Amino acid sequence: MPNTKSAKKAQRQTKAKYEHNQFWKRRIASMKKAILKALSTSGTNADILNAELKSLQKVVDKATKEKVIHKNKAGRITSRFAKKIAAHEDKPAEPKKRANSK
Image: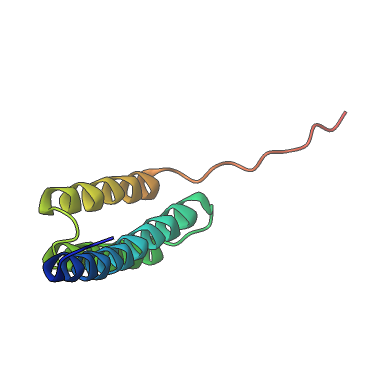
């Protein structure tokens, strides 16, 4: 429990900053989850994945601007997902499995 007036104000500021940071971190996590879900779906179009990546980059850049995450972490997140999407686009279509007919 804060005793001084400045300690009370610091506590209010900390709470507000925490909520602000959590807002951006939740947005980043939900965007990452959406891309991973789209990657796991076999029939996902490359245009959809690129649009998801673009929106992830937008959210990450805004979080960096708001000083929620460091700029190097932002670059690392976007780079990793760009690599995953590029690998997904280069992957050939999986052949259909046939049932054994004996």
